[in-house]
Each structure stands twice: as structure tokens, then as C-alpha cells.
Amino acid sequence: MTSKPTRLNRLLAMVPYFQAHEGFPISQAMADLGVTERELYADLNLLFMCGLPGGYGGDLIELDFPFYDDPKDLVEVEFRERTVSVIFSAGMDRPLRLTRAEATPLLVALRQLVKTPGLVDSSAVDRAIMKIETAVGARVTGVAAAASVRPVDADTTYATIKGAVRDRRALKLRYYTATSDTTSTRTVDPIAVKVVDNAMYLEAWCRDAEGRRLFRFDRVDEATALDEPSRPPAEPESAAVSPVLSQNPDLPVAVIDIDHASKWILDYYSAEPLDDVTAGGSHEDSVRARLVFGSAEWLTRFLLGFAGDVRLVGIESPDDTASTSADEITAAMAERAAAARARYA
Image (cartoon, rainbow, N blue to C red; front, top):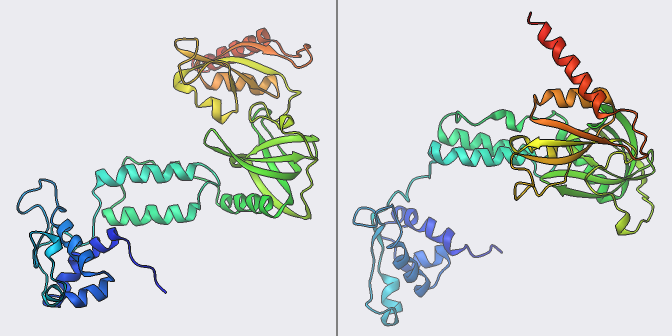
């Protein structure tokens, strides 16, 4: 049994229907559209107020059908025997075509969806993007296709992770840790999938670290479901790890100032803001944050890579015996910068 179409769907179909069935009695239209006399009469009156911008003659849909000063006076038997003619369709008889101005924001939004790993079926989004570009008539310039770039097997990896959470199966992950700039293989017991700051994470018990960890989807190079159940140890909710500083609580922490133009770093590198980012922070031009790092080499390259947009304030160590000091990092940065300049001499 098919469901009755919504009024919007009925209104969209009504103009081309009456154009294709010129001279058909209203009784036949009622049967085809699945409406009563009064529903059809109300729809025809509503169509008179629909059409193109302007709202004048030649803009709004115009129909010829029996009209009553008061709908209460509608004579149902007489109404059924009459016909409806379309005088002006206002374009309702041809498929809608998007303009480039209309298609561009839609394509940007779709590609932004693909950038969030695991959030949507990216193959379906890719097909939608292709259909929109085909409908517009050409590829819309100015919309970066690189926004949807991802590994070829990424969708399979994300599906494996979600399936393991759903089926309560253990996983073997090949995972890139940004703080130490290393890739490792871990066996984990999945707990849940979470969205944190527009990024997808797998919350799981890491058997190697013997603790709860969050694994960011776009840093999982490979995921394999194991033939064993997921058995994370029971922990109180308060013991669950936060998304910030989640990779290794034993690593040192760099306190940094980030220019507002580069505060996307807070999400991408899982840095913990110490200022109110929404309000602009306590500093006029920067946000202060804490960032876990795995080696002095990595932190030096990280700071140099942002060319002054990120500045080192200090270094904290979990055991108060930091093997690397802020002065050493600053000296290493100055040495590398001088060596780079010397190459241009």
C-alpha cells in the first residue's frame, strides 16, 4: 500500500499533470492525485499565489477552474464534472536547473561533509556532487575539489571501525600519533564513536597503553576487525579520558600562543585551549593552549612550520623533570632558521 503524497509533492506535480491531461474531468484528477473535492479546490487556490518573483500578472501561476466566492458554496457533484486548464505555468512544467551561484554554496557544504571522516557515506556525497555539477552544466570553478581528498580505502576503514563498535568486536589499528610523529600498531577494545569539535573519534581501551584512548578517524591508516569480542575494563564515567591530551598522559606539554588566524590548530592537533576561544581569549591577538609533544625534534619542526603564528611560552613535564627546556627548543629553532637563511646566500 503506497502512502498518500504530501501536499508539497502534490502541488509540485499538479501543474504538469493538468497540462498533460487537458480536458480531463476533475473527478479523474481527484482519483489520480488521491484527494477530495475540497482538498483539490484548496490546492488550486493555493497555486494562484505561487510562481516567480514579482507577484504580478505573468509571474504567478494562472489556472482556469470553477471558482466559488465562498468555499462553503462548493457544489461537489458539479465541480467533479468540470475541467482545469493551465494558462501560465510559471516554469512548473520544466525541471529545475540550479544556477552557478546557487550550486556553489551547495557544493561547498557537501565537500565539507566529506572532510569529516566517517560522518556520511562519502561515495553517496561524491555522486551527489557529480549530479549537481552535471545539472549546472560544467564543473563549478572556485570550489576546491581538494576538500574531499581522502585515502582510497578510507571509507572501508571507517566502516570497519563503526562495525566493530556495533558488533562489539576487538580491533587492530595502524595509527598515526601526531604528538610523537610516529605510526604504531595497537590492539583495542572499542567502546563508542564520538564527535569532538567536528572530528570523529573512536573511544576504546588500548591494550598496549592499558588505558582509555581516543583515536581520531583520519589518523587511522588501517583497521582490522578481530575474531574476538571487545572487553574493555569497567571504569567509572569520571575516569573516561577527555579528547584533549588523550594520546599519552606521560608525555611533556608545550604551552603555546596561537594567533587567531591559526586557531584551527586546536582541533587538528588536539591542543587544550587555556583561553575562552569563543570570546577571543584573554589575549587580544592570540589564544594560549597546551599541546602534548613526543620529542624535541617534532616540537621544533612544528613551531618553525607556522612561521611565528605559533609561539612557545614554556614546557611542562608530568614528573617535573623535563628532559627538554623551552630555551633548548628556542635555540634549536634559531639554529635551523639561520641554516635555512644561509642557503640563500
